[in-house]
Picture 1 (tube, one colour):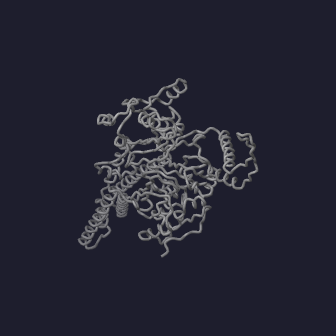
Picture 2 (cartoon, helix red, strand yellow; picture 1 turned 180 degrees about the vertical axis):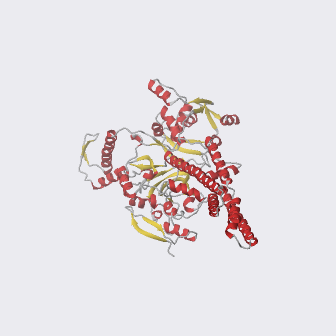
Picture 3 (tube, rainbow, N blue to C red; picture 1 turned 30 degrees about the vertical axis):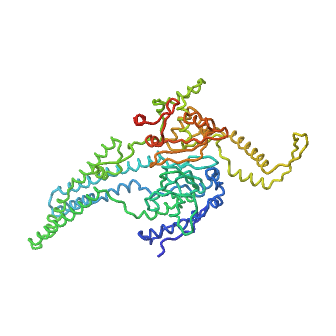
Length: 632
C-alpha cells in the first residue's frame, strides 16, 4: 500500500514537499511515513567541506565554522521572499459564530434542549386537546434560556483564553542567533532561511532543521520528532550511507531542545519543509483528550438519558396495557414525555458552570490563568504542584545588584550613577579582587556583542578566498633594491608571502573605510539573560572587549544543569596581578606564557574544586567557616 506521494513541487533550494494520502491511518503507517520523510535528507552523509560547497553563498569555513561569513543581508532577504517564512501553518481559527455554536454540542446542553423540546411538544399536544395550561411552555422557555446563558458564559471564557494566548505569542516571540555579514545577529525565527548559520546555545529550541557543523558537548532532546526521550550527544561528522537521518545525530530537527553545550549549524530546511511540519499532517487526526470533569459529566448524562427513557417507556407500556391500548397519545404525553422531563436535572448544569466561572474569577485575581473552566477539577484534585518558576511573567532580563568579595557585600551603583563617575574624570582605584572578579565575569561568559569592535571582527572567509585566488593568478612584477650592511646593492623580487601581506593590508584598509562610513548602530548583547547581565555590569566599569583581548580562550567546558559550572582556559597576554599567580612568576622564564583557568557556577560546586581563596591580596586555605560564610 502506498502511504505517501511526493509532489513534484520544488522550491528554489530543491526541497520536496511530502504530502499524506487519504489512505494514511496511523500505527505502522506512521512509522513508514517517518521513514519516508527521512529518505529526503542527504545532508547527514556529506562532510563539512561538501556542505560548504553546497551552500556557497554562506562562505562556510570547514576548519573553523564559527569564523564563517554567513549569508549577506541582501541574499537572506531574497531567499525569504522566494522560500517564505520559517513558520508552520496553524489551523484556521474558528469565527465567533462557529465558536458560539460549538458550545451547544455539550451533552448536558443537548439533554436540556431535548427536555425543552419535549416540554414544548407536550404543551402543543395539550393545546390541541384544549387542555389549558402554560406550565410546560414556561419550563421549555426557562430551559432554553439556561442553555443560551451558560453557553454564552463558556464562549466568553474560551474567547478570552484565545486572546490571551495570542498576546503571549506577541509578547515573547522566538529569537535565534545567526551569523550574517560576518556578525552574530539576533533575529526572529520566522526570518531564518536555508543557508543561514545558526549558533546553538544551551536552553534554546532548535529554530529549523540544521546540519551540525561544530559541537562543544552538544546534548539535544528530540522526543517531539523521534519519540526517543533520551538526551543524546550530537556530532558534526558525516555518517555511513546505511544510517538514516534520525540516527545520524548530526542533524538537529526543528522543535528539538538543546539541553547542554553549544554548537553551530547551517539551516537545511525551513517552514513547511521541516520534518516537524511534515509530521504534523499526521497528528491532526488525533482526538483531543477530555478533562476528568468533562468525562464525568458525559457519563452522568448517558446514565440520566438511559434512566429517563427506560422509566418513561416502562410507565407508558403499563398505562397502555391498563387502558386497553386506548388513548395512546394521552398516555404518551403523561406517561412518557412528562417522566423524561422530570428525570432531567435542569438546574445541575447551571450550578456547575456558575461555580466554575466563580472559581476562574477568584483564580484570576491571584494571577492564575485558567485556560478552560473544566480544567479546574484537575487543579482542585492536585495535592502537590512541583515547579521551578514563580508563575510570574518577566521580560527575561536580569541585573547585577550586589557583589561579594573580600568577605564583604557591596551594592552596585545604578547605571546613571556609574555614568556620572565615569564622566567625572577622577581616577578610581579598584581592589585586585574586584578586578579578578570582572575578568571572570567577562571571559568565562558566552554572551556576545551584536556589533563587535574592529579588533574583534572576524576575518571574512569570502575575502580570504578572493585574496587566495588573486595571489595564485597574480604576476610578480615588482622589484626591490636593497642596500646591505657592506654597502652592496641587491635586487630582490617579492615572494608570495610578501604579496599576500600587501594585499591583506589593502583589504584591511578597505574594511576600516567601510566601517568608518557606516552609521553608528546600537550594540546589543546576545546570550543568556544571566550572562548578558554580567557583561552589562562589567561594561559600566571597563571595556569587556579589552578584557577579553587580554585573555584569549584556548579551551572551554560549557555550563550544564548537572555540573552546574562553566570552565575556561585562557592565555594571559598581560602580567597577571592576582595573588595565586605571583608565586608562578618568581620561577618563570621571561619567554614562557601563563594560562589561566576561570570558573563560574554554583558556589557549593566551585568550592569543591578550590583549595584556597584570596582575601586582601593574600592566599588563605578554604576551611569550614569560609564555606558557611559563602552559604550565608
